[in-house]
Image (cartoon, rainbow over all chains, first blue to last red; front, top):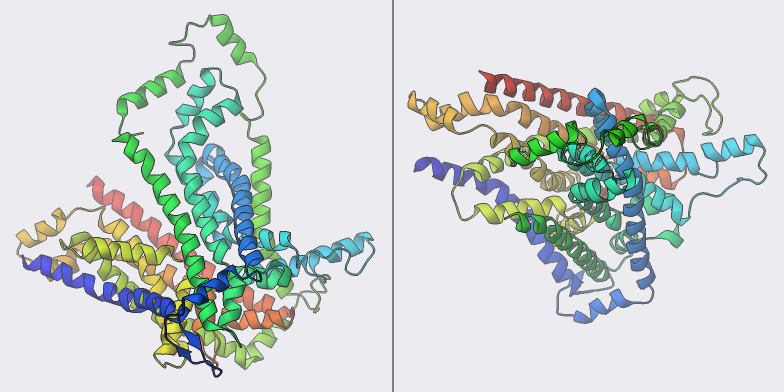
Length: 283
Length: 304
């Protein structure tokens, strides 16, 4: 049928674009990761598998570990903050539910860098909070150093990605039948029991989706650690950025990029497996 | 739950008539009614917590907006209301060049990515071809790939091909990450109305192209417009891809802000940040309005 030919033709432009500017570039990253760089910065391709040893470099190792820890902490905090918020909106939001959800997303549409910069303004040595503390009479100049500390970076990451945790959990709660909660209570379950045995299992998909949506981008984030942190809080993203800007080493940067990609793929596979399992049970 | 109406009815029945099905004496039911409300039944604590989270989400943005109107340089003391920093912004030719460049990038990205993404959505929904599934996977992989990885990959391609990094390379990068968003939004709408309306048009003697132009597209427009606006905002706000794919001539606005922060806080960043927020948030609200109007139109259409 000629209509089908037309539809198949429509697949082509988008698919070709993604092949040329998304798939092929990965091939080049792999090629560069196996190459060497001469003193004027040109990359010579080869099969230098020893480049991959650099990822085990004791210089890099703590940074990789730190990135993973920050991402886990960020995800955990987002869950602790996000679940109650999603629950409150979904159960008690009433007719303002949609508005409340929009208000959760809206700040996220303020520019990413401006949002990080805002925390710089609030927590900086000459920032809003230190100004208040100074006014209250705390000694020291500044009274408290907030920045360049792990909690500033993790706090910034939580702020960056919190909506990504709230939205899928809200969607899961929304899909859940509220009568289940009532039923749990009518069967004399305490609030804690009802939550643990009814609400939590019914919304676990949303939690997992949120964890992936927060975890993936926070592992690869570099601007937050750059602006709110210092060399003590650098993450893998900063390491990659360093290799590709200024006098960096591109092959090492490519190796790190592939390492990051591998780490994230493992997370992604875990996510896909965990979402497909209940579907298997249903059939 | 809706797949299991019987189960659903049972749940409702249990929920609505406490005590039914459980051999509980009426006295206990009575006692339950009189028990003081438990903390989790009443959303007092949860409401307070949620309110605080909203404060946390909005406070940083408000700080930026408020201090953008400060007459003083300080971010600790508010002098008086003034437009000094906005005036400085308007006289900063570099900043204006970046703003213009960012709008230009976002506009071209919006046009190209919306066109490509919409075509791709049509292809994925309608075509019967072996290429469907791989293309779908390709698009979704693109969507979930971390931006720093795709940005570095693009940087390497551009430099290996000998292209000079410029606004063109930024636009190519932005289009690449935007296509999937358009496809997902448009496809989401495309699958909701069945091909019967189009077939009806064909039966009435319309050609394929006429059927799409006169029947399908009018139904699809709001989704296309909403996704186009979303792409504009994402491109305008984008930092990571812009950072790695922009050259030395003009820095897109987020990249310029990034380098300004390195030199320390200047209230001009507050002003430009506020300006960007006004632009992006009003576009997002516009997209929301278009999208919800479409929802209502669709309901009306289905009701007929």
